[in-house]
Image (cartoon, rainbow, N blue to C red; front, side):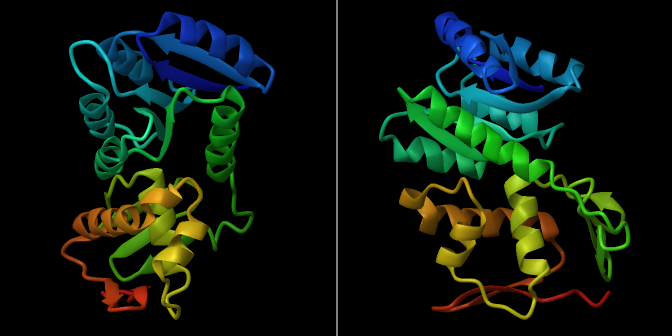
Length: 227
């Protein structure tokens, strides 16, 4: 069973989801306080994914997400207020991987979780093809890591997927629509803004490399570094 951490101060929600998740081979542990949730994440390596509410006591979900991202690249699904587009934009900017508005259907939540976990479990049988290298930039598919001069870039799962998509297809220009279709979990309602944010965040982490080219009116392309 995959272990999911829920950080939400609604104890009733945790109880209901715990019973529901068990039907789908998911084990839920929950914390009602964000600080305790962060501690639980740090002390439990079995946790595969975090469900994070925005409305939390003392520090909100945005700040909690920022603190998690300082030490972990674990996928984060944020629970947002219905129709609050700005919440989802901010969540994406600070490293969330997916979003679901409250109230939600539990089955949709499970489907999103399984989708994220399925992507994480993809393996590459050929160890040689598991590691890609372009000059000082290397990408390890098995570990879901990107290194620049040997230093981990600490990419979120979405940033890693985006880099891998562009880098493995450096001869292709990807439009925003094509990127959105490839990166499942991107909200269609926000795709133009969310893809731009993802590109911007990835570029920041890749500095001083300038290997993601914007072609006005067409999209984005990866330019392999030569050194």
